[in-house]
Length: 87
Ligand code: FES
Image (tube, rainbow, N blue to C red; front, side, top):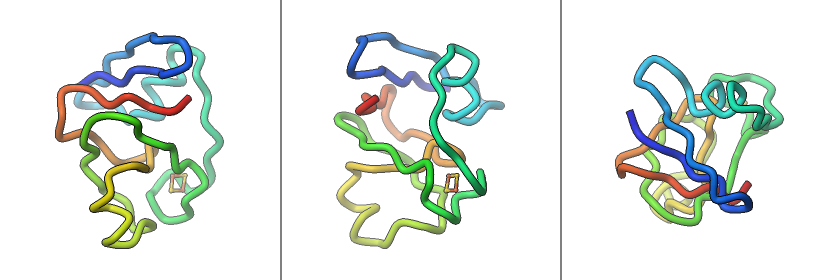
């Protein structure tokens, strides 16, 4: 598990091992537009301000992955303890 922090409100939400970032955010009333929910379409791509995502999508290019400034909350997770999201 890890935490995501919503930059605009400073609120931190725990993401349990059995839940996607998307689902954990939705449980707390934070809704992100999605389509495929499988890491393919890129609809959910969200800016990451701090922390290191663990990319599990098929959408971002290798270059984009290495920059670690965006990730797909429908399927990707975190290598760091916390991700600060530009939401
Ligand atoms: Fe399609 Fe996340 S909803 S990549």
